[in-house]
Length: 303
Image 1 (tube, rainbow, N blue to C red):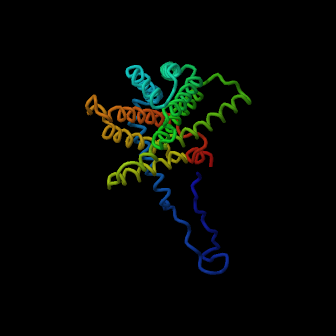
Image 2: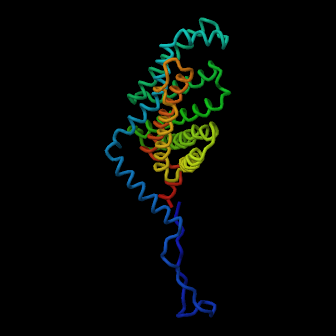
Image 3: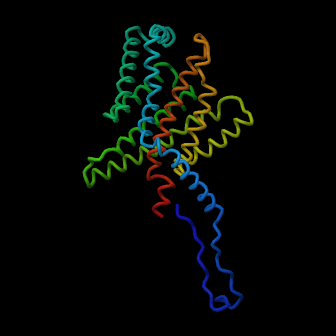
């Protein structure tokens, strides 16, 4: 977004064009918005300096974290196979043969697609496979009308869209001309969709749980960061802020390792923990790639 700059008035000696006293010339003092931008730019430069040693590894870390919830889910299904079959058959009323096929397809799809994403091979097919898993599990387990589950999985989908954008950025073999333009446009749209979807987990966090002074402060700070991510204003800085907030929240609230093995909430805490890790992975890809062309940050470069 272009900065609005004052223009100096025209002067005829000491008189204004209308014969009255001349107005003072516009000062060079920065506006409050310019001051804020200068401070945030300094913070961004400081964060860039701190993150320089890990920058080359951010794409790999982000991709791994995005799929870690699917790998954990595949392992959980294998280790709790009989319990999963019982739930699907007795509570979801799914015929026995179909329950076995449902679980087997989910395990295979999650494992293969996750490994392909980590290896950066056939990312488009791998992402489609994991998106299919998210949808079929929501239907199979009857969780499609659970608001928190729905919002969390929207954020996971946002992370998967960021994987697609990252894979297209890394393609160097696109020919010049119209195919390259189409590829560029497709990346921009998916990058925008990924940014928007990533923040839905935090929306669920804001509207769940008991309110306290600390929760209000964290929610307010996170809400500002979410808006900045969506519109693409200082998106890298705001994404790092969300990574810090979500990571601290995840360790303090979803600390499943402190619960007894037979604690009734252990599996739920473990599931939430790895899902938030996946969303953190999507945010790390956003930090690495930037917000894309549909963003305030990019428009500032143009204007």
